[in-house]
Length: 608
Image 1 (cartoon, rainbow, N blue to C red):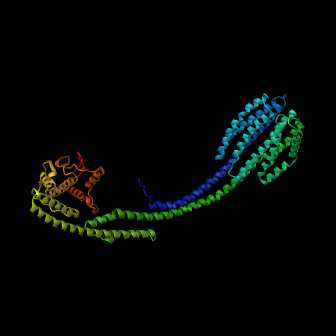
Image 2: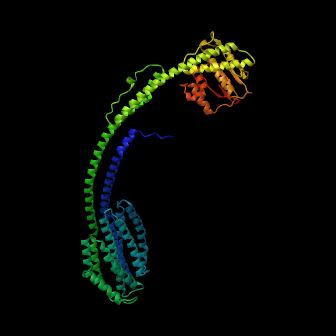
């Protein structure tokens, strides 16, 4: 199906709207981006309160329970009261984390990752039950307990790291730095838990000395590295803390333990001394980290204020530009569209009503005032006005051409009628001289009748009145029998029953002409050894004359087109001269109120 073409009006509107829509789209994108950034920064508060801080509290509880579990294993005669208290605190921190994580309202891809980490964390926390049972039964080693708790804590850090994503680079850097430093601080807790168990037992167990060396090596590398991405003031304070007396004492104690200890050998430091050394360093590190998330929130607040200020300026200026562009586009586009609408209406009126009506009047012989019938359009002084003036010139030229064509047509019709009349007069004299005879002269008589009918075609084409021959009305049988006898190859025509009816005098010649054309067509398009049936019978709306042949027939599409032409005769087109007989039949039928149709015959061929 052919798509309806877009109008000029729509193209003009589209050309004006495209830059306006583009400008509006850019403005909307900028506004959405600003709101998205502000929303993401607002999520920093939500992340801190519902993910980061609860996760840190849970990690601290797990770290404390790990140390108590290791000490419980290292001292066989100790009770489990302190350990149970630690476990209760851990369960409370886990429950609080799970409750607050449900309130997490982050958005975007990173938020989906964070929620997936929540699910992984829930699965990992289920391993605590089995680990606690093995500790209670003393059916595990210090290394296994250390690694088991460290694995759960590692998953907790993956939650914090996923939640640290932010649209503001500085905020995200501070958040991720806090997570990295807490991971490094976890090494301190691992060292504390390991040495708490070792000093309580008084010696290194299997793999414990090697584990200590690995932890200390990772600790001394990761803690300074983790602080390297802090903002300059915080980084200076962090370096000062690492070079202070607490961490110096910790490093000295580590060197002493590793230097004097050995695999399976004794520990040259007591549990009390280790606690007095490690506790200040751990306390200073986590005191430093305590306000790290608050720093990130402060950065987020400042960044949000900058974004809102930018939005207030760019958004307002963009909105003003859009409004001004819209007003200009509406004024210019409206003016152009209105004048084009006037031009289109005038052109449509000219093409569909005025010009066809003028041509019809000219062909009918009416004289018209060409200048008076030409429309004058007032469309300004630009290109649209020039198109309007050109349309006026086209109209005037078309009317002048139509007037000249009508005059030429009328002159040609007069010539055709004059020639046809002369030929008719000569042919009438020849027919009278021949008379209806049999034998060889019958063919000459039939050809002369057919030539006279062709001469009458010219009169019909010219639209002139035809001479009526006859001395009054005749019976239908007489008219049809005479026409059959005057047709070439009349011996092939089989005349069937013909109803008794009378034909008015003014219709005798035209009915004979019409029936003769149909008979000639039936004989011409059927084999020489077949018959053509001619009959007339009463019908519901008058008399039905049937002419049936057994020739090559016509396709359904051709039958449909032929019946359409017979039902609605139109002006003759010289390019369609091959179907002159069809035009003559349709014209005569329309003049006398007759209906002519064709259709397939029962045994092949056509029935008219």
